[in-house]
Each structure stands twice: as structure tokens, then as C-alpha cells.
Image 1: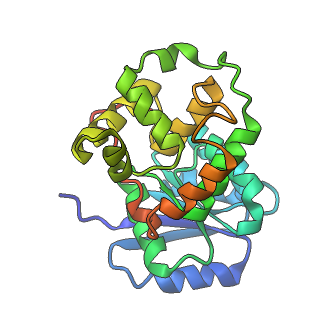
Image 2: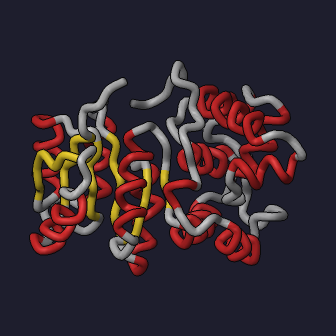
Length: 258
């Protein structure tokens, strides 16, 4: 077992916010803040040099924003996960950061315990999306993608009928437990299906799988169960503690972007 602390890089242009995060996170024995960045360019440079396990990334920063910096980190194939911290009025950036490869989204006013657990979850390979951000994200995806079915049909066609069914339920914002209840199967069975579909789709977490479902046309705006009312319903059904929403679905031997 590896007892090495999780190495963190803080990327935010507001020094006072970075100081606040250091105070909260520095109290955790399994977290080690190895660097700070005040803009996106510095965030990428420090990530290449320090190779932290997780970067806490602000969206709006000078020189290069958090979306572009996240894309730089992912495209450089660095073994670093990005957890985006945003404010509710910046929801238009959520889809962009997700497509860039972010592993999770929390609001800056999230409880300290949720932030700490989100970092641990992302480090383990999971994905974390705050409930109200998830609701907005599903709505934004419906707005952005018309679902022409031409993006990645071959990849989606590799899924079994059951895996497609699970993916559609993921796109509605359901957790493993809720999917298990909907399909009348065990939660372990659902987790296995999710792990298989992540590997087949070549994505590293369920949030990016949902984006691919929209891009490929498997999920379309206006599809039953994915309307505006359903987004609101999903918002209320997601458990109140976002880090527990998404656990490590991918099998340890699975492939996909690191």
C-alpha cells in the first residue's frame, strides 16, 4: 500500500483564496501542497516540472484560463488529474473544462470536507461533480450537441445493449445505486458494466462518457427522460455529498487517457 501523501498544486489568481485552501488542506496528513500558480501558463509549467497528483484549477485566470491549462495538461499525457473549482455563475465554462479533460467540478463554496474527499476521489481515478453543477452540465450538453450520430458511432456500437442502457442512465445523472434500482440488478453488476463501457469508450470516467454519449448522438436533446424537467429531477435525486456520487468504476487494468 502506498502511504505517500497526495501531491497538490493550487492554481488560482487570487492569493487570498490560495491561502484559504492551504489552511484547509494543510491540516490533512494525506495531502501535500507542492506548489502554487497564479495563472494558467504558470499552472501548466509547474505541473510539468513538479508532476503533482492533482491540480485544483480555477477557471478564470490571466494569460491562460483554466480550461486551456487543463487541456495542456491532458494533451501532455501527464499523470496529473485536474479538479476544477468554479463559481455558480460560470456554468458556461463547465462543458469546455470537461471536454478538456477535467476529472471533476466543485464550487468554491463547497464544504471543506467535500473538497478534501473530492481530491481523494479524483486521485483514486474517480470523477466528482457537485449535484447542482451536474444538473447544469446535463442541460448544457443537451444545448451544445444536436446528436447527428456521426461523431464516434463505431465506438458506441461496441457497447452491448445493457451497456448502452447503463450509459443512457448515466446521462440522466443517476448513481450506481439508482441505476441498480432502475434495472433491478445489484450495484456491483452496475459497477462492472460502467467499468466495461469506460474501457470500450476509451474515457477515464463516467462524466466524459456522458459527453461522448451526446457527441455520438446516442443521447439527443429532447429524448425522453433527458428533458429540462428531468434535469431538475436528477438534481434532487443526486446524493448531497458529491464525492460519493462517483466512485472508481474503471477496472484497474482498464485503458484510457491517463
